[in-house]
Length: 471
Image 1: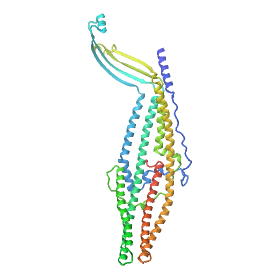
Image 2: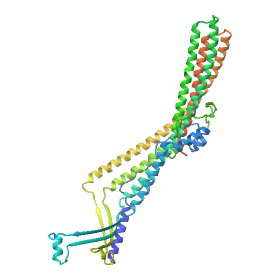
Image 3: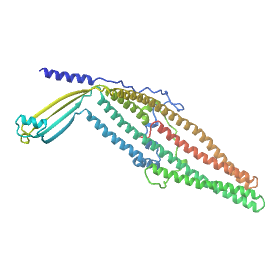
Image 4: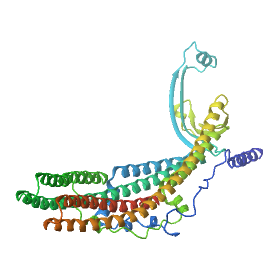
């Protein structure tokens, strides 16, 4: 009865000690967040980040490119493999609380020397032989009590690492959506600029022909012809430049989508893509759950807390209980003679590090410093996220104003070019006015296309900065 009481007392003691925490976790710090984003149009709790990317990017060609990238991009495939690897580690850590069980079957034969201690002993006891055999079959069980929470912390760390890989996959998809959408908008801009350059070349050709006719009639000098040719060549030079950039952008998009370089058939133009007007940013606190990179830093704090606990537990005594039982015999014929061949052993041990204490203490202090660094990195990720949203909102706001001014400038210069050409044909304006007007309208139209691309890219940047793109 006394033995039974002792056993129950030992179990209760282990259970009580298992509830102890040798280290105190640092809670996720309250990040300093503004009540609303600066430059936001209005305070609205809804956010465009809650919209699935297919509802935000409605262009069919763009959707196909993003779909292909999510399925075939190699960074995404690596991220998925990382998730699979972490799943295996989480499953493995769950078995740390389960006792280690091993099966051992041995058979040995030993002929002792007549002059050895064993041989002399056998002779003294009149055994009659110095040939010794030993046959054993046993099952061993070993279990370490999780007194200080080391195994629990290992499980917490593994689970947080797994969740980090899922956040990493979301971050990869977010970056893919951003990269493909911005590359697509850049491709639309380059095609628009190519069309502008080609149109301007044709306009310059028409002007050059008129100036040549005037030169033949003796109305202008060769300088007029040369300046008109230079203007025409300047516009013509842009054509192969834009064609090159288009080919490079197409190849970059194809590689991003996990495909071999090839042309991309476009079904729309830059001017046909609408710029979203209602771009609600929501409230800043929502970033903590929407942004995969911020969530990953938060999970990193969980891992850092667990590592502190694990290193602290290494400094305390470890209680290990082992047991083994089976069959043992000195003769093969009696090996499975039950119950005579049965045996059992139960033992317990407590290991307290002594000489390694300083090393373990250093590892523990290092883990605490790493945890403090993780807190700083979390705060930095939140600050970066808020800054990126603010930057995107500023871009959208100011680009809208630039677009209005640039569009008015283009309209004005197009009218000026038309008037200059008409006056030139009627001899009421000189060739320099025509050339200047054509050069101005070319640059203004190229600038307007660039601003439209920047507007579309800025809306994409805002969507990604708010944590959209992975749903």
